Length: 166
Length: 432
Image (cartoon, rainbow over all chains, first blue to last red; front, side, top):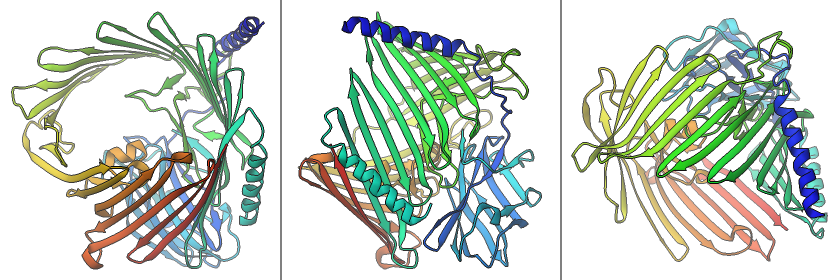
């Protein structure tokens, strides 16, 4: 009896495997990958908040520098204050300024580039509640540099998805 | 999700877990840790991980739930592992509970037949993940002929993790938390493609690796051929441990052909004997930025001592001292990653956290057998080159785990920096 059950399970498994592998893999209508700067949703906890910026599918050996110039980031100064920038995954902060709802900062990784992963964390004090619509980033005032020492000119701002993969 | 909801969710999962204690086929663990930061931000983090196993007919079904104060209910994983005759089967499913999304799944079936290891890997990545949707499979055959090892991986839209290729890493954008899996489905879907027009169905790559050859002056010879659905991709020859007649120096040689390039890289390595008590971390320097030899970078410029360390253990007590001299390129990993000296670039690539601000570590660790990993006590003290405190003291980190009975443990942690108390942590865990 036990042997028959095993054979039956094996048959079901084999059938499922064959069907799965012979099906039209990837028949979803996907899009080719594009270098993306991802703005994470704000995470709030007892009067503090954080927003993590990540990258995905960066070209030219990965992101090694990021410059958010004046006008590249805005936030509601009435609700968000004392913003502190911290580099992640080898990135260090060269300069930062957050005044009157306008933020700008420069981060750099001197040792390697990041193709996919978190690169910078913004931590701040929160008055009331903030949502992802309170933070705006403007690509025209943001520059991305690669590990090869060149500008990454083709990229998009990624929003709307809670997860990303390499 | 509010803090109150998190606490309720943690309590609910705890109670749910405890109700399963008496159930025969169930086993598992639940652990929770609260990190408290004194000041305005009382809770720094609150984590809860519930792990459930259910055994049936030679299989084990697993459920793992991960909740965090920052980010909420981030991961829910399910898995089944077991044997069916000669087949070893593993499946994994990952969901994002906060958005109620399916994220990823993989199925791995392996077997050994007449000395040959056969494996089928299949994975799907949801379109809810940036980088998806994707799906694919890979077949792996591995065997040995004498001392020669041969591995063949045939890719049908997926790659599997090995020495050259990473698996898939799935990140939660809001928190930076991530999960890794072996099978990485590769997105090769063109916009507008359908099942009828092909999608990414079919062959996408073949990699054949041969290793284990050795000659008198070369420790190991390996070759890797990789072709894709577009044709030839690369052919690599690796010679490891080339003896050049100097007792203290050897070379690793890599020759790579791609469709339109050929490159040669020599990596000099020092051959040092077994250290008696003090380990010295050495590297051969060249005029190239990455300290290899290639193109016009042909000079060995020196030998760098970038650190040294002392580790001694007796009767469950381990004393460790590590000193990093080149803090620009090397750092000490966090206790989670073993407190070792590691190149920063390598640590970043491998996802290891390092203390880049500290150059020296004094550590004492005590372990005793017992439930749930036994009793452990760890005290690490770090020193900084930029700190102005006494002796350049930078931080002290203390953690302890104490078993209570046969299935419960309590844990605590404390981190004090020159600027004050960084955090205090309390944890509890139950195994059954």
